[in-house]
Length: 427
Image 1: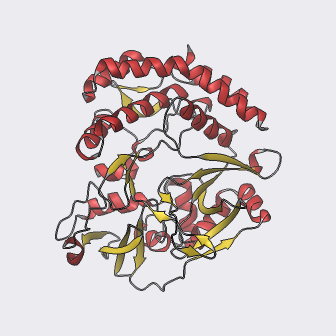
Image 2: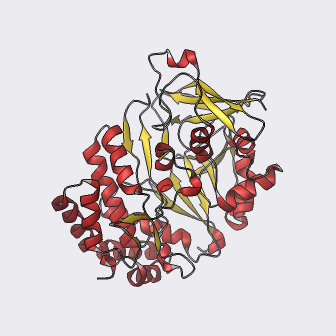
């Protein structure tokens, strides 16, 4: 493997934009193709990789492209399945890069073209996916040449809205949903995430559509969590694949990729100033910077109230339009009340007002952070007070709805969040 070709989907068309030269030491250098730079449609694929002639450094290349890969246990499982070292990010990317988060596709220069298709899954396969956890998701991820970021077991599938049947994509066929398994070691994690997203929506935070797939009696090994991909859209009159409407890909990148920060450094350390950097990035690149800064502010408040200490910079993203010209803050995703689990850390992924522990972050910390990032203190704290006031009722009504749907542990989770979440959430 000497080169990896990099494609991005622009207005529904696959465009070869550049290549990664693979070096003998396991690293690579990315460069945009000269003929791509010369086109009127040319746009950069990352804030950290602006259009330029020549190669980017190995470090910048790795920060962006390794950021497309699974992490933690999921990456170990994928690497083991491929008989590769988990450190071989280029080898893993070559096999999984056919369908990434966003609109990027990575193709080895000696790959054979796989025709786009969708393979229908039967109910037994869905049950197995829920039961077998990361083992089954790794098999499907590898089979579909699909790369999804994050450490949990997940796979990209296509949902037919007409009959609610699921399909595994192949070749250039995009998925419509990300489906996660339950972590058996974390009790009611699927219910937890759905409760968290429902609560966020009730408080005016934009989130992807999500639902729980119950393959049995709602036990841990019988449920899956499905999230509709906001980086996929199905146009009217578009192409068909295997009798199904083919989605368009929308490009996205997380804040670690945009800021040129390695995935291994996604959790903030003292002095990093990640929140300030995120707000500055929105000010410089968002099509509606003030709107997106306020949306990000609301997400930070909610993470604290719900007790989501996994709010690192890879769990916030930028979403591009079909032409890669306009950039907006992506909807909130991967929100879970980690604080309800005794084995989880009480340190947040992002510092607020110089504080990292969820127990030390309070209203004053948010006021200090508002001043630090240059957000008007009056409007920032009005939004804080309003969300804190409405948080309890939004959480409880969401738990009641889930309980009525057969997920009885939702109300117990609701009480646990009251005890373990952020200070304002305990009032």
